[in-house]
Amino acid sequence: MRKVIALVVVMACAMSMMAESRTLVVYFSATGRTKAVAQDIARVNGFDLWEIEAYEPYTEADLNWRDAQSRSSIEMADSTERPTIRICTDLRPYDTIYVGFPIWWGICPRIIQSWVENNILDEKVLIPFATSGSSTIDKAVQFLRSTYPQYNWQDGLLLNNYTEEAIKF
Image (tube, rainbow, N blue to C red; front, side, top):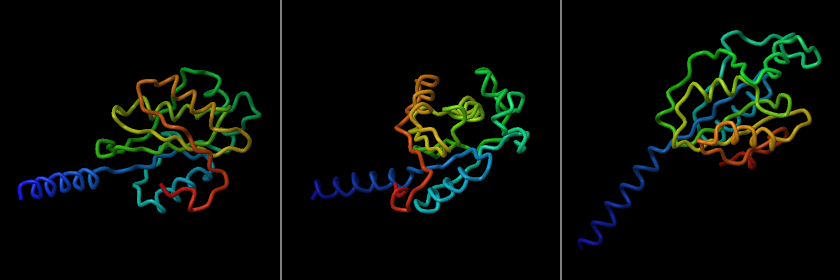
């Protein structure tokens, strides 16, 4: 009888821990493409959703990658640049965080670094996902892993074209 009671207690504790384990989708989207992917991931899986917002929103001119004087070009040319972001959500309840962004210059935009550096991500599982016109996500994942090796970065997902089945986690 004691073994049965002990098994029930162990199972109840495990189920309680699973219920407390929560997943968050955070994303930065300059044009709305990454936002749509993030919303789909959150909706399909029942995850919470949070947008990483620049304190000063990006304009179309800011995003002109062909203009060396555009805001995005200047930010990406300077590895120390960190755009100011709006208030972040409380990450303490989350074990797993999907981190979404468009690929800029082959890596994540500097605003993602602002978010990483303004949050406590110890003991979190971080899963990058991205949208891109022509790049893969491999260089961005490598960049995140080498820049922030103290965090648990998983393999990334490039989600330009996907089905609901592909984003069920």
